[in-house]
Each structure stands twice: as structure tokens, then as C-alpha cells.
Amino acid sequence: MNENDERQEHGGALHPIGVVARRTGVSLHVLRAWERRYGVVQPRRTSGGQRLYSDADVARLRVLRQLTESGRSISQVATLPMAELERLAAEDVRSPEPQEHGVWYRSRSIAAAERLDGEAVYATLMRAVVSLRPGEFMDEVLLPLLREVGEKWHQGQLSPAQEHVVSVAARRVVTWLLAAYEAPAGSPVMLVTTVEGEQHEFGALMVNVVALDEGWRVTYLGTSLPASEVVNAALEVGATLVALSVVTDDDGDRMVAEVARIRAALPATVGVVVGGAGAAARRTDLEEAGVQLVADAAELRVLLRSRQPALPRGGA
Image 1 (cartoon, rainbow, N blue to C red):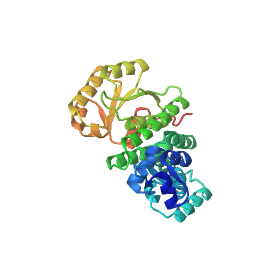
Image 2: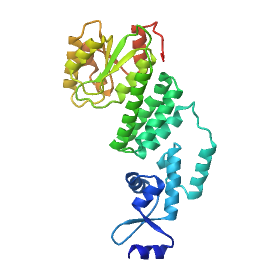
Image 3: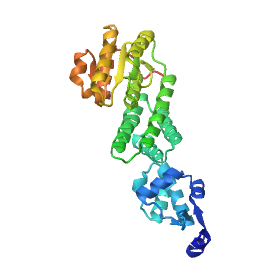
């Protein structure tokens, strides 16, 4: 059966996947993923295996995209009948955005990540960061968002590419924050990075925002920096504290050795703090190396305030 026969049999126009992607704004990758995982539509196929979509399929996909852009997860709406989808879409248009709640920003960011729409994730996080104080942004939006994304990735609900979309957007927003906020005069300097071989950036990004909210001047060097470079950079910028994020536990002995080298090469007046799941797994070894471990953002705040208790917070 050829494409013309398909059209005659089912009535109305049938559209190839490329046309559907252009008309709905749903990328080819996301469209295939939505079909495979959630069965959002059931396209016909020609004898040659080409997908063909009806006008009704196109209309359904348009509404689904609208709903995900409003912050709803595709898994929650994928199987709903068209009438219910249209009702929800109308409700989303009428309802004011709950700007005061991080839930809206997080759900919208994850929905955009599911579409691999990095610009939408970035725009949503920027909207949050200009509406909230840095600490509020971190506690209500960024920290729970990154935690949820990590959990979804471990559970197979988000692909590595979708996780990466959020990481890149978060890094852009934090970079903007570091440039936009001026620390109070005389603020101590924190240098933030990850040990060599550690590519996960989420923990380091969160450290940046906490330190910024506490009034510290932050020098962020990205990920995977050799011990010698960390030491040189810390001395160059006059760091009071070096913060290292260790998420993975793949080579704990090497990680401990790297951290120990950093601690030994820096003056005793420069603190070295380490956080993350990988660090927690080697707590005893790291403490013996003379570094301090923090379990979460709350502990980090306590540490920062103890080193500079009278520091003004949230400079702009």
C-alpha cells in the first residue's frame, strides 16, 4: 500500500514525520521518544515503514507540546483523551503562574529538558533567578531541580542528553549570577572546582550559589582540575577557602590523594572543604588528610558564616 492508498483508506491528509515536527514544534527525537515511551499517537506506516500522521495526530501533538511548555510532565498527560488535554490547556492559559513557588520553575524546566529544549530550560531558570534572591533560587529551584533530574536519570526517566541540557542551562545561569552580583568590599574569596577526573558539575554549581548568597566572592574554575592547578589558582586569587565537589566514587584512592596534595600545598590559613556523595564515601580518609567535609547546603552555610560571621549577605 502506497501513501496515496493510505490517505484514501483513512480519509484526509497524512503527513510524514518531518512535516509533523515542523507543524507541531516537537523535534524528531522527542516525537519518537514520546511515541516509544508513552504512545502519545499511533501513526500509520507505509509498506516501506514510513510513519504517517493524521490531522488529529498533529492537533494532539500541538496540545501536548503546549502542556509540557506550561510545566506539565509528558508522563502525566500522554494518555489523556483529547477533550481533557484541551481542558487542561485552557486552564493553564487562565491560571496565573505561581511565581512564588519553585515548583512551577522546576516542572517547567524538566518538561523543557524532556523536549531537549535547552534554551527553554535556560529561560525558565533565568526567570527564576531574577525574581528570587540567590539563596531562594538555590533552595527553592536549583537544588531541588538538580536533585530531581539526578533521580530521574538514575531511574531511566531522563536520558544522559536530557540531564546534560539541564546542567548546561544551570551553568549558564550560575555564570550570569557570578558576573551580575558584586560581593561586599573586603569579602573573602572562595575558589570552587572539582578534582581531576570529576566531570559532574551539579554539586559545584550549588556551592557557587550558596557562597554567593552568603556574600563571598567566588572564583569558579569548572570541572576536573589537577591538584597543582587548584593550588596555583587559589594562591593567585587569594582564596580563603577552596571548595571541591566529588560526586563519583569510581577511584576513591586517587581522589583522596588529589585532595591531600591540595591540602598539603596550601597554607594552613586557607581552608579546604569537600562535599558530595563520592567524598562522603571516603570521609575518614579525607578527614585524616586535614580537610573538612560538608554534607549539604545547610552545613556549608554554617561553615561560611563561621569563617566570616559578620559578612553582609546577598550583595547586588
